[in-house]
Each structure stands twice: as structure tokens, then as C-alpha cells.
Image (cartoon, rainbow, N blue to C red; front, side, top):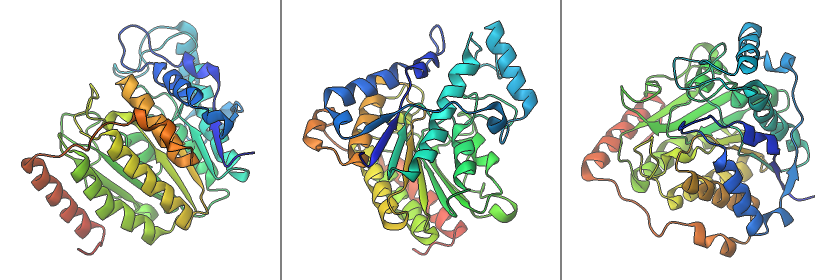
Length: 350
């Protein structure tokens, strides 16, 4: 048995929207192929997900909503939300197997240090509403189940879109530090995730949003990450870290205007991996997320997995971008202002 488990089921590929919809399961297939070609599965164990029950799903979704998805799945037509998430035949089963993968990833922490489900990361789904291509919120469900074994959990979400569903499903939870770096603009989906959304009730202060302007490159993204995320995780001292590794913060993603290269992604992953070993006895769960430049997303995920699993990196170097991407002076100024504001809100010293 190796230290890293890769949760996989070919039925993941059924979660792929028809027509010219941007969410295609080609990303996951391409990632698995990149790993296979480089011999990764001699060092990583592939583990199939165990399909969860509707009863377990109802811990975070209403029974009425689950029944609605089943009905639309049988009909195979119409919309599950206001327009982004169309129904297709079998979408209930396709969504359920992917959620099951992230739940399985948590269960596997009993035997593995690191567990990976690139088929997960549906952070827009809400208690009784689909949103942003997401039907069921695997991240929130897996974290609630992980709380049965772990006292303090940190979620680091680097998807280019704010994870509004996960945030609000866990908004008052004091056991979970929820950190999100995302592009923010009032007219950019989902329109949430500004610096003043910090949690409620016992969870007040446990939500940290880092809203980044369009054009944020590696330099300022990493500056914000190192100035805010790293010290808050060190202060919190989690015994489990979740990394939601959405590929749409990449500089050539068609839906998001952040400017991360694979080098920027890797720097974040290396740091999160190191923090997991420093505070959480290595316990780290990585899911996928968005990513609509399929080739780039597959490279980001393969490189991230190579880092987390400690694979021979010479086999993966050809997947890297050549260089880091710099932000403009205008963007630098904006990010510096945001970071300064966040330090004051969250009690971090300069």
C-alpha cells in the first residue's frame, strides 16, 4: 500500500453536460491518461468509490431537492437551476458517484496520508438548489463527515470562482476554517465572496475570502496566499486539510480572468502539502473543481498529484509552463490594498 490514494470510477465520465456546455469530463480522462503514461499508478493506489446512500446525502441536501434531481434525471430535460446546469438522463447517478468519491476519500484517510478525487469539487451546490454546474455539494458533505474523526479542518479553495455553496453550508461551523482565493467582480459569477463575508454565529471569523481582481498573476496571487492563508492556517493548526484545486484560475481559462501559471499552482500545492505535514500528520484531501481549458486543467491536476504523492518530478517537467506571470502595476496596487484590508479584518499583523 502506498501513501496516496486516487479515487476513480469510469462512471465519473458520465458527468458531462451535452452540446457546447463548458463542463466536460474530458478533463478527468486527460488527467488520468497523463498519470498513466508517467507510471504514477505504480506509486499511487487507485481505489473505487463506495456509492453513498440518499440518507447520507440528506445530511446537507433536502429530501425534496434530492427527489427533484431524481425526477429531472429520469426526464432528461429542463434546467436544474436558473440556466447554468441543464438536466440530462442519468445526471442523478452521475452526480452521486462523484460525491461518493469525495466521501470515500475521507474514509480512506484511515489508511492513507493523502487522498485525491479529481472528480469532486462541486462547491456551488446549495442545500436545495443546483448552481454553477454543481448538483450535489461533495465538499461540504465530506467535511461534515470528516468532523466525526477530525477536530479542526481547513478548506483551501483555489478555484477561480467563489465557492458560495460550500461557504454557506458551513458558514456557522467553528470547526472548519474556510479560505477561498477567487476572482471577484460584482457581475462575475456567483457575485459572492467579498472580504466582509467572514462567517456567522460560532463560525464568525472562520470564513476568509480573498477577492482578487481580474489580471492577478502568479506574483500577487502568491503574495496574497502567503500573507493571509499561510499565517491563518498556522494559527488554526488543523488536523486535516482539504484542497479544492479548481483549474480555472489558469491564465488561459476561457471563463475566468486570473493569471496563474502551472508554476503558481504548484507553489500553492507545495505549501498546502507542507502545512498538512506540519500540522495534520500529512492528512490531505485534494478534489478537482472548475477548469475549462481542459488541457491546462489536466496538466495542473497531474502536476499537483505528482507533488502530493512525491513522484519522480522529472517525469512531469514537460507538463510545466515555462515561466511565472507578472501582474500589472494597477493589479498590484489593488491586491496590496485587499491584503491590507484582510489583515485588519482577520487580526493579522503586518
